[in-house]
Image 1 (cartoon, rainbow, N blue to C red):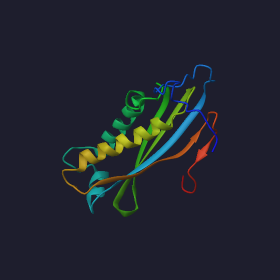
Image 2 (cartoon, rainbow, N blue to C red):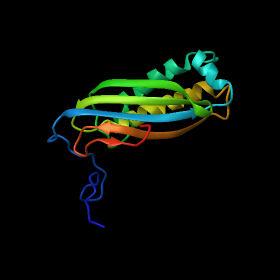
Image 3 (cartoon, rainbow, N blue to C red):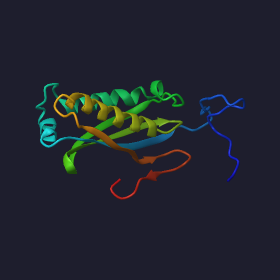
Amino acid sequence: MQNVPFTHVGEGGEARMVDVAAKAETLRTAVAEGFVRLSEGVLARVLAGDLPKGAVIETARLAGIMAAKRTSDLIPMCHPLRLTEVDILAEAASGGALRLEAKVVAVDRTGVEMEAMTAVSVAALTVYDMVKAVDRSAAIDGIRLLRKTGGKSGDFSAGAGA
């Protein structure tokens, strides 16, 4: 195995944020997904907006957008980015799950993968919070990066269905 220096560790072993000042600003995109598994009948109520806490999908959408914008406040080594677009999609998936997808776009010096992952994670947590009174067995899973474009490492796709 090659001896590759750690990018986020200083000479004394201290954690540090990488300097991206010399990197060119380019278009960066990332799409992540996650699922909230729900009990029978609860997904239909979520989609219909028929739950005691109100409009689950709209609240989750707003929470995901807000979370993407606050990623650098939550993840220590993330840079604050100037996001140009955040979109959250919610749709029914097989097995009674709600599938959430977050798309994040920026023209900046570093990628937006963490912003997309944070957005979909917080959107899923918001769904969980809003359904827990009617579905104690709700579960979040499958959070992953589907694809990203831009940057030095190039494009990435998780494969089929991504």
